[in-house]
Image (cartoon, rainbow, N blue to C red; front, side, top):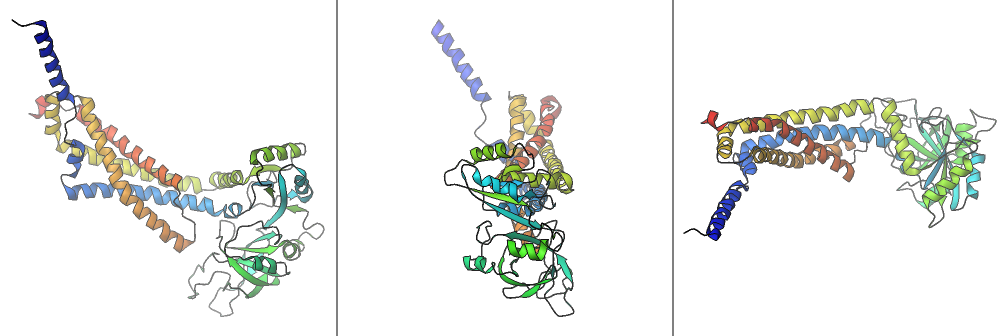
Length: 426
């Protein structure tokens, strides 16, 4: 006679069997489906990797162009900057009154305030070479004027002695990463400004100048290179010929250094309060000014549209490639999917297999794709001089784009699995 305990035990064993049936089998089906043919799997991974390279290179060039226009700001050795609110970019002339900049020194937490000057439009540097095959004439150059004793710029390779020598009128520091010779006539690899080296003499804004030492900053959209001079040289060589009345009445940036331990946000708020009445001084942290500069170039030039479209194109190409891979794989394994469905596996489980495959493809394509992308960054940096930098944040974004790209393709391919009917297959 069957007892209640036996009946209960029977149902429990049957439920356990049902649950065991519904558990994922120990064999990783997603991996087996993709990796059983090694050559085919390698082709699949290379297809996804191609999309990763396409997105990564476009994204890298876009960021390099934006970064190249903010290098000067990033080299400023100060926590807060003061600029004219109408100055949309460093490229423009609008300056802030030196009198107003000097007022910042009275704010609690401020250690020093240094005027920084930058000229893009009127200054030019003459080519130093004498051979007729070299480029002759002058090229526009960005001239940065600063007090050599203020320790306002971070220029690796420039010693304290070089900074002191800059106090001599008619001396300059030169940018070793100024634009290379564009027509390749000069086989010595000189820049468009000729052979820049310590001790070389050339002309800045039509007046003789001697080069003291070199630093690395790079060119941007506005100029082919940069030179750094003292504020006195900047006044006499660059500003006075064009603004004889008050050549140094305005500076481009008021660089604020804080006392040790001072809170940046608190000092910024105090400066904003001090300059609120006039409305002629904009107070920003250095990082905020970098973001502001990038925003200008992103919204007012074709950079954002052109290279953003390139990243989007890579994403779409990757989706198409991944969908074709997954759809083909599902079609090749329809009998297997139908068998799993016939013995009780749900559409949800079968869909999860396809999504697992999409994630495996994302990882398999991302790793070689990023290796090629990083190598391309190094090569383009060497060839063009643009700073293609792979930061952790940019790496994470490309990884996220790759994962979303493949998962979205997987979700499209899942519909084929859901439509599988065991009766039609067998």
